Length: 43
Image (cartoon, rainbow, N blue to C red; front, side):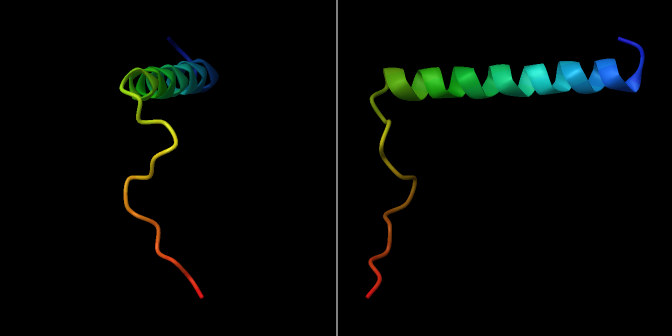
């Protein structure tokens, strides 16, 4: 697409689509509610 606004809009839509796909795979694998690393306990 031509124009800065169109390129920016398409980039945002692509990023949102990527995140939704990533979330879908995480839900299907049953990994929701987990953290990448164990949380540290504070006093």
